[in-house]
Image (tube, rainbow, N blue to C red; front, side):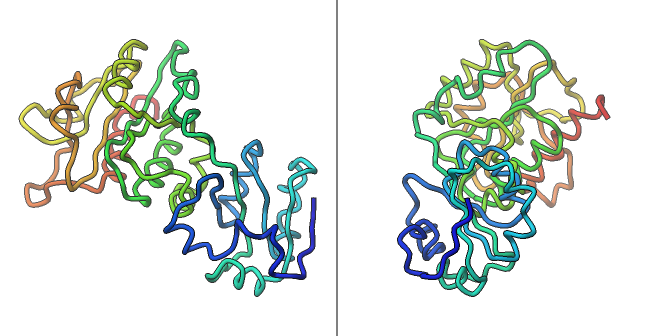
Length: 271
């Protein structure tokens, strides 16, 4: 439903006000999405959409996307200059959206990833302690690009619904099934009950060349932040530990790059 905004102090615009300051403070019940490509992917999952804030030009350009939105979802339209004043930063494309944040209990529910119990080939990426939002966004994009089935984050990872994470993912945080594991040990036990092989991407004495490992029918790949890696206690729970062979002068790759390399290697039999 299109709603023209003339008064920039309109209280209905509160979710969009001073965006960068609110990013630092966090948002308890809403999250923001920006850019046409990301918002387009987001509105395809409109059960989460709270509202949109668009410039007049963006409203015209996104007519085909907006036609699928339920009528009760407000689409606020104002000038691009007005959007910049409301949001507090330069918005080049004039496209913002707000979404309802899922309850924490829902994110932690195994039912959120119930499709993993279905028979057949499955791939799950499990980031461990990855706190950088760019890396989280990139991991989701890699998972989409190499057609893995889900992302299961431990409790220390950055929020995939953070504005920058969803932008870096090009909106794939809304298309890839994901959940949060409040207890990583219990999550690994659950995956093993579903016949997943638990594999860590990490260097160390147990680690073998990734290329020597035959892809399994059901694999869960654990990846850690490059500064700290995957804790030893978690490695002890893994069935296999693999590494990416590289120059000795470079001890590690960025976690999202390493994830992409591993997923590519495992998909070679499908390419």
